[in-house]
Image (cartoon, rainbow, N blue to C red; front, side, top):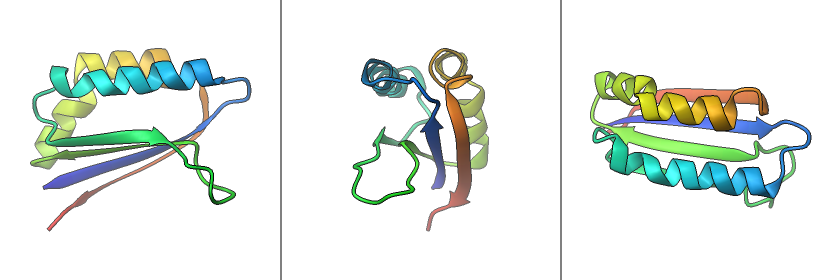
Length: 98
């Protein structure tokens, strides 16, 4: 299995309505992108200072499947509408699991 983890720091002024809409958009992706084997995401629980605000963890079968997810039009539309221009920091890693 191949795992993608991405974390975001929201920009100033991003409110709970936007976070809720982003969460709903992420919720819809697994039904649209068949290479996703496991897909979990959500806002930081707020128990430690200095954390990122939001995380997405996507499991796929291979690096090629990750590229399919990354480049999928529905994923790109989500990034364009809910992420691009709305975060001050982003950090990601992809790695082989098992």
